[in-house]
Length: 279
Image 1 (tube, rainbow, N blue to C red):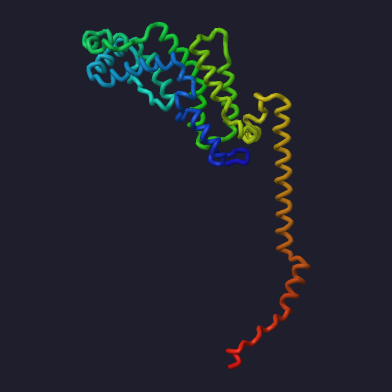
Image 2 (image 1 turned 45 degrees about the vertical axis):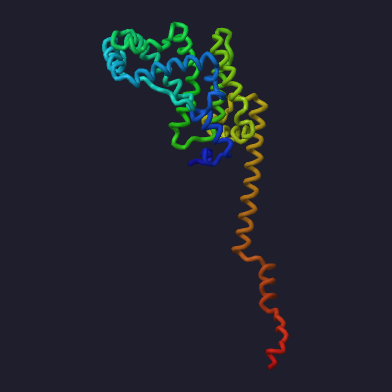
């Protein structure tokens, strides 16, 4: 590991918790954009459809036939894990990929009679699902970067957070659903890494890939570099003091030698003789 990298294992425990929870690891629906009512209902409908195909061997066989007929990739539908937002994105993305085959299978004679209670997605739902997937892609990218790194570094966190915040910037063209999701995600991010901000910025500045700190204002960059310079000077001074002490110990200090000679010639008084010893 180079001197410009600090492994996640060296980071404060609060930092590690926030990284793993937000960038692709367990995170509750109350903390991210998926708790928005419209999104929750949409995910619920998709789960019911996916669960139906997972339970029914007949429906699965018909879906495979429709995939082949429509020349759609023969991929299985994905059921998300409620505690992992990125699995919900994967579920939606796979549903959109297989949408034509799913619709055809549900309308077939063999499947239709057992699928009457399924609430399938209309054109507005499909449009929302596509927008949700596009919105979550930067978060998925951040997750993938951290997961693929053999030694994930602190220096990645600030750039990834800046990338996500930029992608969540409100746009007047956003639908109500997307606007609400962006608001929820930005609120979630704003409360993260506040205590470790200086620590993370310094780690980022030491990484040659991000040392320009483009996401900061000029005065903020100068402040980070000033702190690093002071810490570097303090470290150099500590090393110099240590080396001086070690050199003195190896060469022998005259004052120490005199003390040692005085101790060697000092005669310790004999202890008094007790009554038992006289007998």
